Image (cartoon, rainbow, N blue to C red; front, side, top):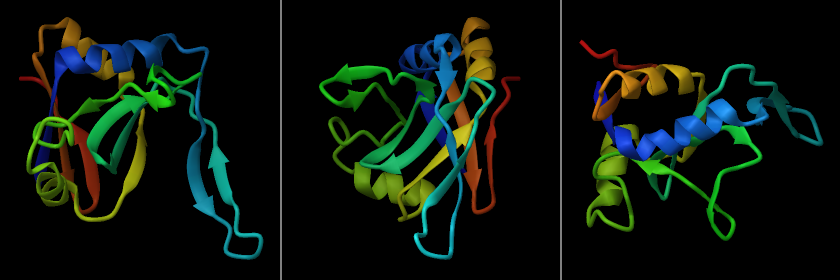
Length: 139
């Protein structure tokens, strides 16, 4: 099992955007196997965050409209060691933590993360393994 560690201060904007957004973006359910092979999405009801692995590993709001940080780029909070703008070995760290394939996973945890932050958490931790992703509860 690996642990993704995020600074609570960086996640504050992510969760607040998700919690106050007028709606949540839909999430991928599956791809049709018959032509035209389109992506099938389903609604997301709870305020959510997206765990993404592409250029690093990060969390972003699933709220719509998107939380734009600059130009066309959404605001994101990077996992410790996985920020391509700050961490020299971000590529290797990202692969070690979550594997080599890019992905995006919708997680209905905006309220739970906000609660941890309001209770004084300075870090938010997500455990990840081959078959599970979980928000680590504070002790």
